[in-house]
Amino acid sequence: MNGKNEDPVRPELSLIIPARGAEAFLESSLAKAMTAFTELDCPFEIIVVPNAGPEESRSTEERALALAAQSDGRIRVVPHRGAPGKGAAVATGVAAARGDLLFFADADFHNGTEFFRFALSELRAGADFVTGNRRRNESVFDIPVRLIGLAYRRHRIGLLFNRCVRLLFPIQTLDTQAGEKAFTRSFGERAFGLELCPGFFFDIELFLFCRENRCVWREVPIGVELHYERSTVNVMRDAVQALKWLTRIWWQYHRGHYRL
Image (cartoon, rainbow, N blue to C red):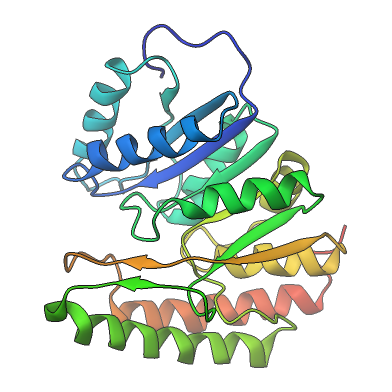
């Protein structure tokens, strides 16, 4: 499903935005994305992938379709109808993308837009896979005083999770879960073809695929812009899911699943 007046020029860049419960801020996020990618000065498309569960409202999808209809054709809406989850939604976006270089970002754009410029430079320089890292010394957090406690708790939980990941897998980064990543079409098609986890932990699979197949990985600093207390994270629920998926990914990794 596309916006009207679809651009006949094949895009070089595709931005995939998995969107769940994002109707309240989707318009402002798409405006930021349009501005950021227009400044990159090459043909692009933005693919919104609504991924509500079967019992959830499809208001995000309806909002995305309305915004796409008002656009210049560079915004497309590709609903995900399979198992709900961010990883599955991104995979749907990868399959629909027409660009040679693919990006994905969280729908609330809480990591800003500078990543896209840095990532594009790294991809053009020969990288296969570029990731953002919120824990680099150069990263800057933009947080009001009232949310400092929330940000600190998330930061500590993230560090604990990352330590577990690095104990289990030969992954070096301090931030596997940053919401912005980029890769070549070849990398995306091959990596998501092996994806097991439909949820948040698919990022770990991307790092393992990259390592096992000797792809070129680069990392750039990204910041955090946190101005409200929205989150899809539930600590107890996600702790159970983390145990389940880390165990399954570990088992499949040692069986050579991610090596082509």
